[in-house]
Length: 482
Ligand code: GCO
Image (tube, rainbow, N blue to C red; front, top):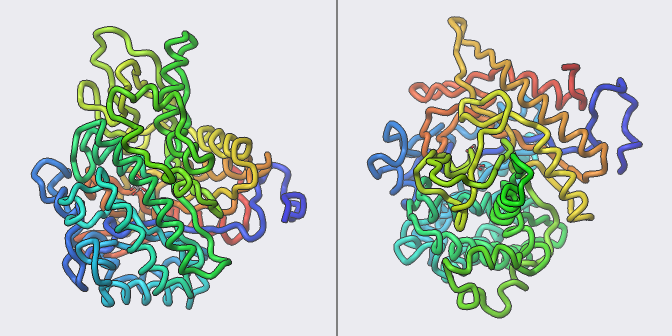
Protein backbone atom coordinates (compact mmCIF):
# COMPACT_ATOMS: atom_id res chain seq x y z
CA UNK A 1 0.00 0.00 0.00
CA UNK A 2 1.46 3.39 -0.92
CA UNK A 3 0.18 6.88 -0.59
CA UNK A 4 -0.04 7.28 -4.38
CA UNK A 5 -2.78 4.63 -4.51
CA UNK A 6 -5.08 6.86 -2.48
CA UNK A 7 -8.28 8.33 -3.93
CA UNK A 8 -7.69 11.72 -5.52
CA UNK A 9 -9.23 14.12 -2.94
CA UNK A 10 -9.19 17.89 -3.16
CA UNK A 11 -5.49 18.89 -3.32
CA UNK A 12 -5.66 20.68 0.02
CA UNK A 13 -7.53 17.92 1.86
CA UNK A 14 -5.02 15.82 3.82
CA UNK A 15 -5.61 12.12 3.32
CA UNK A 16 -4.81 8.95 5.25
CA UNK A 17 -3.61 5.60 3.92
CA UNK A 18 -6.31 2.96 3.27
CA UNK A 19 -6.61 0.59 6.25
CA UNK A 20 -5.53 3.39 8.58
CA UNK A 21 -6.55 2.50 12.14
CA UNK A 22 -8.96 5.05 13.60
CA UNK A 23 -9.28 4.63 17.33
CA UNK A 24 -9.55 6.07 20.77
CA UNK A 25 -7.40 5.27 23.78
CA UNK A 26 -8.17 4.76 27.47
CA UNK A 27 -6.52 3.14 30.49
CA UNK A 28 -7.83 0.78 33.13
CA UNK A 29 -7.35 2.88 36.27
CA UNK A 30 -8.66 5.99 34.54
CA UNK A 31 -12.02 4.60 33.42
CA UNK A 32 -12.85 1.15 34.87
CA UNK A 33 -13.78 1.80 38.48
CA UNK A 34 -14.84 -1.41 40.28
CA UNK A 35 -11.55 -1.04 42.12
CA UNK A 36 -12.38 -3.73 44.67
CA UNK A 37 -14.62 -5.90 42.49
CA UNK A 38 -14.00 -9.08 40.58
CA UNK A 39 -10.95 -10.04 42.60
CA UNK A 40 -8.97 -6.87 41.83
CA UNK A 41 -6.43 -5.93 44.51
CA UNK A 42 -5.01 -2.44 45.15
CA UNK A 43 -2.51 -0.86 42.78
CA UNK A 44 -0.05 1.90 43.60
CA UNK A 45 -2.62 4.36 42.23
CA UNK A 46 -5.25 3.15 44.73
CA UNK A 47 -2.71 3.83 47.48
CA UNK A 48 -1.46 7.11 46.00
CA UNK A 49 -4.91 8.56 45.37
CA UNK A 50 -5.82 7.81 49.00
CA UNK A 51 -2.75 9.66 50.25
CA UNK A 52 -3.86 13.16 51.29
CA UNK A 53 -2.63 15.91 48.99
CA UNK A 54 -1.50 13.69 46.12
CA UNK A 55 -4.57 13.92 43.87
CA UNK A 56 -6.68 17.05 43.49
CA UNK A 57 -9.93 17.03 45.42
CA UNK A 58 -8.90 13.65 46.90
CA UNK A 59 -10.31 11.98 43.76
CA UNK A 60 -9.69 8.24 43.32
CA UNK A 61 -10.31 5.65 40.60
CA UNK A 62 -12.78 3.75 42.81
CA UNK A 63 -15.66 4.45 40.38
CA UNK A 64 -14.08 6.55 37.60
CA UNK A 65 -16.31 6.23 34.50
CA UNK A 66 -17.70 2.90 35.74
CA UNK A 67 -16.51 1.30 32.52
CA UNK A 68 -16.28 -2.09 34.25
CA UNK A 69 -20.09 -2.17 34.39
CA UNK A 70 -20.87 0.04 31.38
CA UNK A 71 -18.41 -1.30 28.82
CA UNK A 72 -21.11 -2.61 26.49
CA UNK A 73 -22.66 0.86 26.20
CA UNK A 74 -19.20 2.33 25.68
CA UNK A 75 -18.43 -0.17 22.92
CA UNK A 76 -21.75 0.76 21.31
CA UNK A 77 -20.64 4.41 21.47
CA UNK A 78 -17.37 3.48 19.73
CA UNK A 79 -19.32 1.68 17.01
CA UNK A 80 -21.58 4.71 16.54
CA UNK A 81 -18.45 6.80 15.98
CA UNK A 82 -17.24 4.31 13.39
CA UNK A 83 -14.02 3.49 15.24
CA UNK A 84 -11.99 0.70 13.67
CA UNK A 85 -9.85 0.13 16.76
CA UNK A 86 -9.81 0.68 20.51
CA UNK A 87 -6.74 0.93 22.70
CA UNK A 88 -7.33 -0.03 26.31
CA UNK A 89 -5.18 -1.35 29.14
CA UNK A 90 -5.52 -4.42 31.31
CA UNK A 91 -5.33 -3.86 35.06
CA UNK A 92 -2.46 -6.04 36.28
CA UNK A 93 -3.99 -6.27 39.80
CA UNK A 94 -7.23 -7.53 38.25
CA UNK A 95 -5.50 -10.25 36.23
CA UNK A 96 -2.85 -11.27 38.76
CA UNK A 97 -4.02 -10.07 42.19
CA UNK A 98 -1.07 -9.15 44.37
CA UNK A 99 1.11 -9.00 41.26
CA UNK A 100 2.35 -12.58 41.39
CA UNK A 101 0.98 -16.07 41.85
CA UNK A 102 -2.34 -17.42 40.60
CA UNK A 103 -4.19 -15.71 37.81
CA UNK A 104 -7.67 -14.38 38.68
CA UNK A 105 -10.17 -16.00 36.26
CA UNK A 106 -12.80 -13.37 37.12
CA UNK A 107 -10.36 -10.60 36.24
CA UNK A 108 -9.54 -12.11 32.87
CA UNK A 109 -13.22 -12.80 32.27
CA UNK A 110 -13.89 -9.05 32.24
CA UNK A 111 -11.39 -8.57 29.44
CA UNK A 112 -12.82 -11.59 27.65
CA UNK A 113 -16.21 -9.87 27.64
CA UNK A 114 -14.75 -6.53 26.57
CA UNK A 115 -12.77 -8.08 23.69
CA UNK A 116 -15.76 -10.10 22.50
CA UNK A 117 -17.96 -6.99 22.58
CA UNK A 118 -15.40 -5.11 20.49
CA UNK A 119 -15.06 -7.92 17.95
CA UNK A 120 -18.85 -8.13 17.63
CA UNK A 121 -18.71 -4.52 16.42
CA UNK A 122 -15.68 -5.13 14.15
CA UNK A 123 -13.52 -2.96 16.38
CA UNK A 124 -9.90 -4.14 16.62
CA UNK A 125 -8.82 -4.50 20.26
CA UNK A 126 -5.37 -3.09 21.05
CA UNK A 127 -4.27 -4.17 24.53
CA UNK A 128 -1.73 -2.36 26.71
CA UNK A 129 -0.40 -4.53 29.52
CA UNK A 130 0.94 -1.80 31.79
CA UNK A 131 -0.61 1.64 32.08
CA UNK A 132 0.85 2.49 35.51
CA UNK A 133 -1.32 0.43 37.90
CA UNK A 134 1.43 -1.67 39.50
CA UNK A 135 0.04 -4.07 42.14
CA UNK A 136 0.82 -2.53 45.53
CA UNK A 137 2.44 -5.70 46.86
CA UNK A 138 5.14 -5.42 44.20
CA UNK A 139 5.82 -1.80 45.18
CA UNK A 140 6.01 -2.94 48.81
CA UNK A 141 8.78 -5.30 47.64
CA UNK A 142 10.66 -2.42 45.93
CA UNK A 143 8.56 -1.74 42.88
CA UNK A 144 10.32 -0.83 39.65
CA UNK A 145 13.62 -0.28 41.47
CA UNK A 146 13.66 -4.05 41.95
CA UNK A 147 14.62 -6.34 39.09
CA UNK A 148 12.15 -9.00 40.20
CA UNK A 149 9.25 -6.73 39.22
CA UNK A 150 10.30 -7.09 35.58
CA UNK A 151 10.14 -10.87 35.95
CA UNK A 152 6.66 -10.71 37.54
CA UNK A 153 5.57 -8.52 34.62
CA UNK A 154 6.63 -11.18 32.11
CA UNK A 155 4.57 -13.79 33.99
CA UNK A 156 1.54 -11.47 33.90
CA UNK A 157 2.06 -10.83 30.17
CA UNK A 158 2.12 -14.56 29.46
CA UNK A 159 -1.10 -15.12 31.44
CA UNK A 160 -2.92 -12.35 29.58
CA UNK A 161 -1.72 -13.59 26.19
CA UNK A 162 -2.73 -17.19 26.97
CA UNK A 163 -6.29 -16.09 27.66
CA UNK A 164 -6.79 -13.33 25.06
CA UNK A 165 -4.20 -14.08 22.39
CA UNK A 166 -6.66 -15.95 20.19
CA UNK A 167 -8.65 -12.72 19.70
CA UNK A 168 -6.26 -9.85 20.49
CA UNK A 169 -3.64 -9.44 17.79
CA UNK A 170 -2.12 -6.08 18.79
CA UNK A 171 -0.30 -5.78 22.12
CA UNK A 172 1.72 -3.08 23.84
CA UNK A 173 3.96 -3.94 26.78
CA UNK A 174 4.24 -0.53 28.51
CA UNK A 175 2.60 2.84 28.22
CA UNK A 176 4.98 5.76 28.70
CA UNK A 177 7.72 4.25 30.89
CA UNK A 178 9.07 7.81 31.18
CA UNK A 179 6.09 8.73 33.36
CA UNK A 180 6.29 5.50 35.39
CA UNK A 181 9.99 6.05 36.13
CA UNK A 182 10.49 9.80 36.32
CA UNK A 183 7.12 11.00 37.64
CA UNK A 184 6.69 7.92 39.86
CA UNK A 185 10.20 7.67 41.31
CA UNK A 186 11.86 10.98 40.33
CA UNK A 187 9.70 13.84 41.54
CA UNK A 188 6.83 11.80 42.96
CA UNK A 189 3.91 13.59 41.30
CA UNK A 190 2.68 10.17 40.19
CA UNK A 191 2.39 6.90 42.09
CA UNK A 192 4.23 5.55 44.01
CA UNK A 193 5.32 9.10 44.87
CA UNK A 194 9.04 8.46 45.43
CA UNK A 195 11.58 11.25 44.95
CA UNK A 196 15.04 9.95 44.14
CA UNK A 197 16.62 10.43 40.71
CA UNK A 198 18.85 7.37 41.14
CA UNK A 199 15.74 5.30 41.85
CA UNK A 200 14.06 6.85 38.82
CA UNK A 201 16.90 5.62 36.60
CA UNK A 202 16.90 2.18 38.24
CA UNK A 203 13.13 2.06 37.65
CA UNK A 204 13.76 3.10 34.06
CA UNK A 205 16.09 0.19 33.41
CA UNK A 206 13.82 -2.35 35.04
CA UNK A 207 10.88 -1.03 33.03
CA UNK A 208 12.98 -1.47 29.89
CA UNK A 209 13.85 -4.98 31.04
CA UNK A 210 10.16 -5.65 31.73
CA UNK A 211 9.42 -4.57 28.17
CA UNK A 212 11.98 -7.03 26.81
CA UNK A 213 10.98 -9.94 29.02
CA UNK A 214 7.33 -9.14 28.38
CA UNK A 215 7.92 -9.11 24.63
CA UNK A 216 9.51 -12.57 24.87
CA UNK A 217 6.62 -13.83 27.01
CA UNK A 218 4.07 -12.53 24.51
CA UNK A 219 5.91 -14.05 21.54
CA UNK A 220 5.96 -17.42 23.31
CA UNK A 221 2.19 -17.41 23.76
CA UNK A 222 0.83 -15.52 20.75
CA UNK A 223 0.28 -16.60 17.15
CA UNK A 224 3.16 -15.59 14.86
CA UNK A 225 1.02 -12.89 13.21
CA UNK A 226 0.43 -11.02 16.46
CA UNK A 227 1.98 -7.57 16.76
CA UNK A 228 3.97 -6.44 19.77
CA UNK A 229 4.84 -2.80 20.41
CA UNK A 230 5.90 -0.23 23.00
CA UNK A 231 4.28 3.16 23.60
CA UNK A 232 6.53 6.14 24.30
CA UNK A 233 5.73 9.78 25.04
CA UNK A 234 8.58 11.05 22.93
CA UNK A 235 9.31 14.76 23.20
CA UNK A 236 9.78 17.34 20.47
CA UNK A 237 12.65 19.05 22.28
CA UNK A 238 13.62 22.51 21.08
CA UNK A 239 16.41 24.84 22.23
CA UNK A 240 15.14 28.36 22.99
CA UNK A 241 18.54 29.83 22.27
CA UNK A 242 21.64 29.15 20.19
CA UNK A 243 24.41 29.29 22.78
CA UNK A 244 26.38 26.09 23.36
CA UNK A 245 24.76 25.89 26.81
CA UNK A 246 21.26 26.17 25.28
CA UNK A 247 22.06 23.49 22.72
CA UNK A 248 23.51 21.24 25.41
CA UNK A 249 20.34 21.65 27.47
CA UNK A 250 18.36 20.38 24.47
CA UNK A 251 20.79 17.49 23.98
CA UNK A 252 20.49 16.53 27.62
CA UNK A 253 16.69 16.53 27.67
CA UNK A 254 16.47 14.79 24.28
CA UNK A 255 18.63 12.08 25.85
CA UNK A 256 16.40 11.70 28.92
CA UNK A 257 13.11 11.94 27.02
CA UNK A 258 13.85 10.07 23.82
CA UNK A 259 17.23 8.36 23.38
CA UNK A 260 17.22 6.66 26.79
CA UNK A 261 14.29 4.65 25.36
CA UNK A 262 14.92 4.49 21.61
CA UNK A 263 18.57 3.46 21.88
CA UNK A 264 18.17 0.40 24.16
CA UNK A 265 14.95 -0.77 22.49
CA UNK A 266 16.01 -0.35 18.86
CA UNK A 267 19.82 -0.41 19.08
CA UNK A 268 20.60 -2.50 22.18
CA UNK A 269 22.60 0.21 23.95
CA UNK A 270 22.16 3.16 26.27
CA UNK A 271 23.31 6.55 24.90
CA UNK A 272 26.83 7.29 26.11
CA UNK A 273 26.05 10.95 26.84
CA UNK A 274 23.12 10.03 29.08
CA UNK A 275 25.25 7.47 30.94
CA UNK A 276 27.86 10.18 31.47
CA UNK A 277 25.31 12.84 32.46
CA UNK A 278 23.85 10.55 35.15
CA UNK A 279 26.92 8.61 36.32
CA UNK A 280 26.91 10.52 39.62
CA UNK A 281 23.41 9.30 40.41
CA UNK A 282 23.89 5.51 40.13
CA UNK A 283 26.25 2.74 39.13
CA UNK A 284 25.05 1.79 35.66
CA UNK A 285 27.50 -1.14 35.48
CA UNK A 286 25.97 -2.69 38.60
CA UNK A 287 22.44 -2.08 37.31
CA UNK A 288 22.72 -3.32 33.73
CA UNK A 289 23.60 -7.02 33.63
CA UNK A 290 24.96 -9.03 30.73
CA UNK A 291 22.11 -9.94 28.43
CA UNK A 292 19.76 -7.18 29.60
CA UNK A 293 20.18 -5.06 26.47
CA UNK A 294 19.70 -8.08 24.25
CA UNK A 295 16.39 -8.73 26.04
CA UNK A 296 15.34 -5.09 25.80
CA UNK A 297 16.11 -4.84 22.08
CA UNK A 298 13.96 -7.77 20.97
CA UNK A 299 12.39 -6.92 17.58
CA UNK A 300 9.06 -5.07 17.64
CA UNK A 301 6.30 -4.82 15.07
CA UNK A 302 5.50 -1.16 15.66
CA UNK A 303 6.25 1.83 17.88
CA UNK A 304 3.45 3.80 19.55
CA UNK A 305 3.91 7.54 20.02
CA UNK A 306 1.93 9.61 22.52
CA UNK A 307 2.14 13.32 21.74
CA UNK A 308 0.50 16.36 23.33
CA UNK A 309 2.82 19.37 23.35
CA UNK A 310 6.42 20.38 22.55
CA UNK A 311 9.25 20.86 25.06
CA UNK A 312 11.23 24.14 25.01
CA UNK A 313 14.48 24.34 26.97
CA UNK A 314 17.43 26.68 27.50
CA UNK A 315 20.46 26.84 29.76
CA UNK A 316 19.49 27.62 33.36
CA UNK A 317 20.58 31.04 34.51
CA UNK A 318 22.18 31.38 37.94
CA UNK A 319 19.74 32.03 40.69
CA UNK A 320 16.71 31.34 38.53
CA UNK A 321 13.72 30.04 40.43
CA UNK A 322 13.01 28.45 37.10
CA UNK A 323 10.20 26.19 35.99
CA UNK A 324 12.00 22.99 36.83
CA UNK A 325 10.32 20.73 34.37
CA UNK A 326 8.50 20.41 31.09
CA UNK A 327 4.70 20.57 30.82
CA UNK A 328 4.38 16.80 31.24
CA UNK A 329 6.14 17.01 34.59
CA UNK A 330 3.19 18.90 36.03
CA UNK A 331 5.23 20.88 38.49
CA UNK A 332 6.54 24.39 38.63
CA UNK A 333 9.29 26.69 39.68
CA UNK A 334 11.23 25.51 42.67
CA UNK A 335 9.59 22.12 42.99
CA UNK A 336 11.49 18.91 42.43
CA UNK A 337 12.05 18.07 38.80
CA UNK A 338 11.42 14.61 37.34
CA UNK A 339 14.46 15.02 35.08
CA UNK A 340 17.65 13.54 36.57
CA UNK A 341 20.85 15.57 36.12
CA UNK A 342 18.93 18.57 34.73
CA UNK A 343 20.28 21.26 37.07
CA UNK A 344 21.61 23.17 34.07
CA UNK A 345 18.30 23.19 32.23
CA UNK A 346 15.51 25.74 32.25
CA UNK A 347 12.13 24.77 30.81
CA UNK A 348 10.31 27.57 29.06
CA UNK A 349 6.66 27.94 28.15
CA UNK A 350 6.53 27.29 24.41
CA UNK A 351 4.45 29.73 22.35
CA UNK A 352 0.91 28.87 21.30
CA UNK A 353 -2.57 28.76 22.73
CA UNK A 354 -2.98 26.68 25.87
CA UNK A 355 -5.12 23.68 26.70
CA UNK A 356 -6.72 23.30 30.13
CA UNK A 357 -3.50 21.53 31.19
CA UNK A 358 -1.61 24.74 30.37
CA UNK A 359 0.10 22.78 27.57
CA UNK A 360 1.01 24.81 24.48
CA UNK A 361 -0.75 23.69 21.29
CA UNK A 362 1.81 23.00 18.54
CA UNK A 363 1.08 20.21 16.07
CA UNK A 364 4.43 20.70 14.33
CA UNK A 365 5.97 18.82 17.26
CA UNK A 366 4.06 15.70 16.22
CA UNK A 367 5.24 16.11 12.62
CA UNK A 368 8.82 16.51 13.89
CA UNK A 369 8.67 13.30 15.93
CA UNK A 370 7.07 11.22 13.16
CA UNK A 371 9.57 12.35 10.51
CA UNK A 372 12.49 11.92 12.93
CA UNK A 373 11.42 8.31 13.45
CA UNK A 374 10.95 7.89 9.68
CA UNK A 375 14.65 8.72 9.33
CA UNK A 376 16.01 7.04 12.48
CA UNK A 377 13.88 3.89 12.45
CA UNK A 378 13.25 3.12 8.78
CA UNK A 379 11.01 0.06 8.43
CA UNK A 380 9.38 0.50 11.85
CA UNK A 381 5.63 1.13 11.50
CA UNK A 382 4.44 4.01 13.65
CA UNK A 383 1.12 4.50 15.41
CA UNK A 384 -0.02 7.68 17.11
CA UNK A 385 -1.31 5.93 20.23
CA UNK A 386 -2.37 9.06 22.10
CA UNK A 387 -3.16 12.61 21.07
CA UNK A 388 -5.84 14.91 22.38
CA UNK A 389 -6.55 17.84 24.64
CA UNK A 390 -8.31 18.84 27.83
CA UNK A 391 -10.51 21.88 27.74
CA UNK A 392 -12.93 23.28 30.30
CA UNK A 393 -15.99 21.94 28.52
CA UNK A 394 -19.38 23.49 29.15
CA UNK A 395 -22.59 21.51 28.94
CA UNK A 396 -25.24 23.89 27.67
CA UNK A 397 -28.89 23.91 28.87
CA UNK A 398 -29.85 21.53 26.10
CA UNK A 399 -27.19 19.10 27.36
CA UNK A 400 -24.87 19.59 24.42
CA UNK A 401 -21.11 20.10 24.67
CA UNK A 402 -19.68 22.38 22.01
CA UNK A 403 -15.88 22.04 22.09
CA UNK A 404 -14.48 23.98 19.12
CA UNK A 405 -11.04 24.28 20.71
CA UNK A 406 -10.72 20.51 20.93
CA UNK A 407 -11.89 20.18 17.29
CA UNK A 408 -9.24 22.71 16.26
CA UNK A 409 -6.57 20.84 18.25
CA UNK A 410 -7.52 17.50 16.68
CA UNK A 411 -7.71 19.01 13.18
CA UNK A 412 -4.21 20.50 13.48
CA UNK A 413 -2.67 17.31 14.82
CA UNK A 414 -4.38 15.02 12.32
CA UNK A 415 -3.17 17.35 9.56
CA UNK A 416 0.35 16.94 10.97
CA UNK A 417 -0.07 13.14 10.86
CA UNK A 418 -1.29 13.30 7.25
CA UNK A 419 1.61 15.59 6.32
CA UNK A 420 4.13 13.24 7.93
CA UNK A 421 2.57 10.27 6.12
CA UNK A 422 2.69 12.18 2.83
CA UNK A 423 6.37 12.85 3.58
CA UNK A 424 7.11 9.16 3.97
CA UNK A 425 6.47 8.37 7.64
CA UNK A 426 4.89 4.92 7.87
CA UNK A 427 1.98 5.94 10.11
CA UNK A 428 -0.55 3.15 10.50
CA UNK A 429 -3.09 4.63 12.88
CA UNK A 430 -4.28 7.35 15.24
CA UNK A 431 -5.79 6.81 18.70
CA UNK A 432 -7.45 9.88 20.11
CA UNK A 433 -6.99 10.46 23.85
CA UNK A 434 -9.59 9.94 25.02
CA UNK A 435 -12.94 8.28 24.37
CA UNK A 436 -14.35 9.35 27.74
CA UNK A 437 -13.66 12.07 30.27
CA UNK A 438 -11.72 10.18 32.93
CA UNK A 439 -9.39 10.22 35.95
CA UNK A 440 -6.49 12.43 34.89
CA UNK A 441 -4.00 11.13 37.45
CA UNK A 442 -2.84 13.84 39.89
CA UNK A 443 -5.50 16.18 38.46
CA UNK A 444 -8.32 13.79 39.35
CA UNK A 445 -11.52 14.43 37.38
CA UNK A 446 -10.72 18.11 36.96
CA UNK A 447 -9.33 17.76 33.44
CA UNK A 448 -11.60 16.51 30.68
CA UNK A 449 -9.83 14.87 27.69
CA UNK A 450 -12.83 12.95 26.40
CA UNK A 451 -14.67 13.41 23.12
CA UNK A 452 -17.56 11.97 25.11
CA UNK A 453 -18.59 13.95 28.17
CA UNK A 454 -19.11 11.96 31.37
CA UNK A 455 -21.34 13.29 34.13
CA UNK A 456 -19.58 11.44 36.95
CA UNK A 457 -22.56 11.80 39.29
CA UNK A 458 -24.99 10.10 36.91
CA UNK A 459 -22.42 8.40 34.63
CA UNK A 460 -24.40 9.79 31.69
CA UNK A 461 -22.35 9.85 28.48
CA UNK A 462 -22.84 12.76 26.03
CA UNK A 463 -20.88 12.83 22.76
CA UNK A 464 -19.29 16.26 22.33
CA UNK A 465 -19.14 18.08 18.99
CA UNK A 466 -15.58 16.72 18.68
CA UNK A 467 -16.95 13.16 18.71
CA UNK A 468 -19.22 13.91 15.75
CA UNK A 469 -16.38 15.70 14.00
CA UNK A 470 -14.05 12.73 14.51
CA UNK A 471 -16.74 10.30 13.29
CA UNK A 472 -17.05 12.29 10.05
CA UNK A 473 -13.28 12.28 9.51
CA UNK A 474 -13.26 8.50 10.00
CA UNK A 475 -16.20 8.04 7.63
CA UNK A 476 -14.75 10.22 4.85
CA UNK A 477 -11.07 9.43 5.40
CA UNK A 478 -10.13 13.06 4.83
CA UNK A 479 -9.89 16.15 7.01
CA UNK A 480 -12.53 18.81 6.35
CA UNK A 481 -11.24 22.19 5.27
CA UNK A 482 -10.03 24.25 8.22
C1 GCO B 1 -0.30 9.92 29.36
C2 GCO B 1 -1.18 8.85 29.72
C3 GCO B 1 -2.64 9.19 29.81
C4 GCO B 1 -2.96 10.62 30.20
C5 GCO B 1 -3.04 11.50 28.96
C6 GCO B 1 -3.29 12.95 29.34
O1 GCO B 1 0.07 9.97 28.19
O2 GCO B 1 0.09 10.66 30.26
O3 GCO B 1 -1.03 7.79 28.78
O4 GCO B 1 -3.04 8.30 30.81
O5 GCO B 1 -4.19 10.67 30.84
O6 GCO B 1 -1.83 11.47 28.28
O7 GCO B 1 -2.28 13.40 30.20
